[in-house]
Length: 121
Image (cartoon, rainbow, N blue to C red; front, top):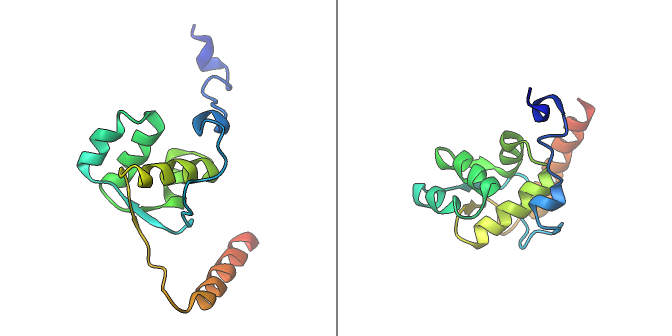
């Protein structure tokens, strides 16, 4: 009998171990930011580590938001943000932003209302 299967802590990896102790991302990646990976980037990500390869695989067929990446990989959002920022910096992911140059206040108001609605759920 494999004890690791019976022990719920067997697959637990502390978030700080995944990010090597870092809590701040190299760049600001919004929760709604859309990211994609090319097939070449997916292959290259195999050498960047298991978690980064999982993220690249999730983003290969279809662009994903940071929130979706965290959900699909079952990573805490902060961990996903740090890894994704690293991957964008290293050229493994492409960040697509729809942030307008003007009218940011109106956009923030909409996002705050969405967040408020989600909290009420």
